[in-house]
Image (cartoon, rainbow, N blue to C red):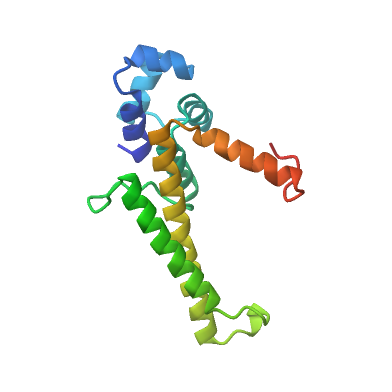
Length: 171
């Protein structure tokens, strides 16, 4: 069973298949097929689930599952998801990223970098990716605990970027 199938079953929670299927606009039989892995879940259905549930974990998993990029939702045996532990880890990752970035000179064209400079750049990029994961993990944990809409945060952010002229009318 893929991660998405397991997550859909988990997200359904106490709802019956009939209730959840109605909420996302599919038949109970189709939902059963999604949950058992007999058929793949179409992107339109995943989008509907995302809109209906506004679940940060689901949204993070969608991005990593479909595109193979972006932060993953951390749920392994060594993760402490208490908000203060996640906050401390986020601060640690941010400090490491800032320190590494300050240590990386970007004043000359990248095509002229020596191998040791490329390695330093790669280390900085790795630190930035780790910080991105930590930031989104903290955002997901806090949104879930506080009942703040993860989707609305992003929608507001996109509108702000658009109003400042950083993105076109994408949304």
